[in-house]
Length: 233
Picture 1 (cartoon, rainbow, N blue to C red):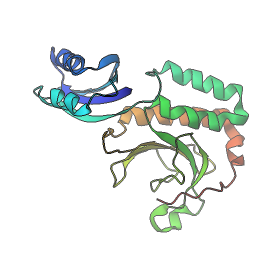
Picture 2: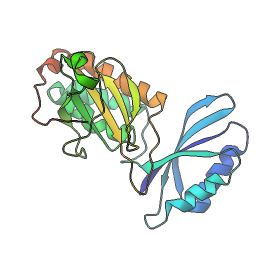
Picture 3: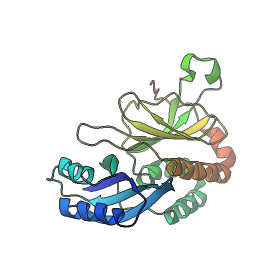
Picture 4: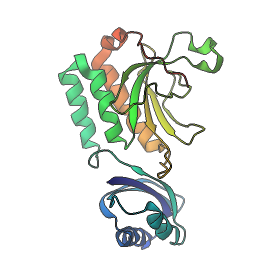
């Protein structure tokens, strides 16, 4: 299976090589490395690896933990092949080519781009601010792996941000800036794998995609009706 491994490590020569060697010795085949952050002598890297399905992830975690200064921030299952920002442009081109299905195209594609489990376009009611907790969001469109009903966080249509649920699941949310629509992306916690929270660069990437799609789709977003599926956090 394809795994995403997020590691925080000292930003000095040789440490990245140690992490790569440990991944290889543990049985992981590295197919992509993305540097998310380099700050204050530390780096945050995402490794996408092919992992033998029968192997135990604990072996991998133990090997990485033995490297001085290295911390594993999360290990979770990735969907599809590793992605690059070039695929963002391809997605936007698809949305522009078929705007009638543009929102569905975006929602269905985002989990693969951000190594997430599912995503939904949530409709936040006009009176959200006066409601207890600001809740009451419903689902406008859901990707194919979305649970029914999905457990949505307390979203508001104000700004893009990352959120963590009490059960350990992680969300990234980004508003479209109209019609009360907010794109919600989820990484779910499981008994065997613990995903990392959405990094600020991932939230920024999501926000850019959403803003671009809002420009492309324009008034079509106002036509998203009140969905029949209610999502109560």
